[in-house]
Amino acid sequence: MDVDYLILGQGLSGTWLSYYLLKAGQTCIVFDKEDPLASSRVAGGIINPVTGRRHAKVWMVDEVIGFADQAYREIGASVNETVIAAKNIVDFFPSPDTKISFEKRVAENNIYMKTYPEPEKFRDLFDYPFGWGEITPAYTVILEKLLPAWRNRLKELQILREENLETSKLVITENYVEYGDIRAKKIIFCNGDHAAIQPWFKALPFAPNKGQILVLDIPGLPPDRIYKKNITLVPLDENGRWWAGSSYEWNLNIPDPQKNSG
Image (cartoon, rainbow, N blue to C red; front, side, top):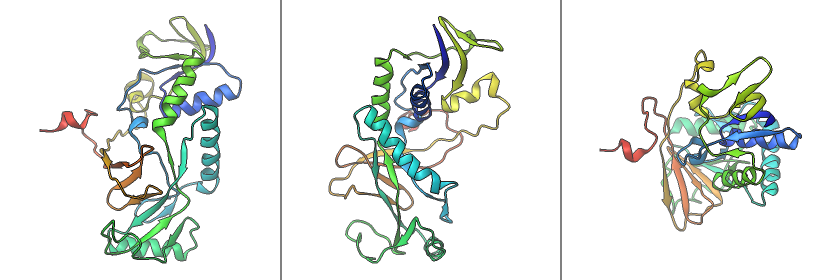
């Protein structure tokens, strides 16, 4: 079987790459043995135009945020699912310094940030002694819909191999890549931190890290916003369920938190 591209991984990157290649009339085969703990499948899916404790604008956000909204609506329409939702971020200031930083950015006319005229609006729900501001527009990508829906589309097109690709069996030449019955012009690795162990990428400065999340039932908490303080609460598609996270850990090799307890 001759194809243009061999794609390794069907997380968010592999999903978008295969979507745009097919849209451009290219052919591809995607290898992905589904892992429920893969990064894309447990991520919060937040599109946030502001980053860090200093509330800096994300690089190229003016161009990217509108494009992302439109692109996710297009891919959602192609699989008959709504896969993006507008969810502004309520930023509860964890310290006086972060409040000063936020207000400074507002004064500098950062169009994605505003102080709110109702300081007591969330007092019945949260404790926030230093006040709050709002980041807008922001979005959540509904990954629990997008990834399975696109996976089903790849199955319908018969271009998904639900198995691990054994890189030791790859035949790589100047003009093509061969694996079993497949010959492709190019191979593209979209398998996240697994790429770090491949011989072709050993010289790259990978720095894998791990976050921790909880899925919570919080009935009655309004799901029209993302709430952020020291952790972030993101509304999931299932009513009353929330994604809570995360942290950064550098030395854990086991993805399942239950296996790290005790």
